[in-house]
Image (cartoon, rainbow, N blue to C red; front, side, top):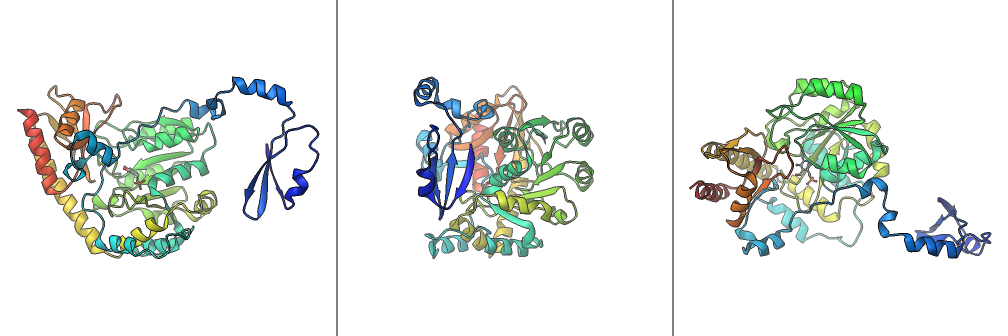
Length: 416
Ligand SMILES: Cc1ncc(COP(=O)(O)O)c(C=O)c1O
């Protein structure tokens, strides 16, 4: 198969093709792109072959092995299932920000002037605002449809099928998922029992396995631990591209490492509007990249990856830094209160967190999955993990004080 660029469509479509099937012609703007199938199989043969084909035979082999995606239940579906109005569900299972975005966001979305025009492929307004917010020039910044999109985009730019990535579980599962979609192998260097990184084993694995990139998360999801400068610098000295995911950095009290991309050619830092600015539903993330890397992401990204609404909302959120700061402070205060309360629950062992969630080991013979299900029946959603390593844990997102009160009430009813 090949792509031939031609300027005269009719000339090609009337050309003699020596018995081969005619090309499938598709239109792409003013130039015509013709996908010419280099096949000389005769029609009868082809239809016999077609009868044996099933749809999945067209799918790339590595994707056929992919486990089916487990979608989360949309809020409305959840509400029907639980027999409760969405407002009566306490959603502490996805680290969303229950305060919502600043009022400027609703105003800006309501008065959007050009929703019928394609968005700016370079998200210039947003990147300029982010430069002011982060202190890093816009040239180093690229925005995406959530940090999720950027994780996939980085992999598409960096990985050949069969390449390896290094992952440090337990951590955000999208790294493993996107690696599988991109045909890469995942080398795992599990975290220590306190969830800190095992830097020595990471160095060994880089030497022996030669991964292209490593995904690090600070604060880490699900436990909320952070990576100190010393460990990060040791890892940055290894011959591997370091993708540092700072989705929750605002709750940690430590400064973002976005500016480090000017110093380290092998560092990418990812951030998001989903948590701090409560825009999870609008899908806006961004990354800081060395200039030698960012130019390739510009070439490979979808042109309109950040919608007009997403850019408008993100810019409006940045116009009210006081609101963002106040909401962050309220969540951090509530995290501390929630942590103390969880410490008092006889069957939970909470881990100190630098983020907007708290991981708890479920102890004293209590089943973590049942705990999640019992709370769900009371309208309180928390996160439970299906995998072997984490099945005895639950993660609770930090909500408003009244959410903590309902959660604690539910937990005390369960313990009776
Ligand atoms: C560590 C981490 N990175 C990235 C994301 C996704 O961010 P976004 O909503 O911007 O795609 C999440 C979402 O929960 C996360 O936990």
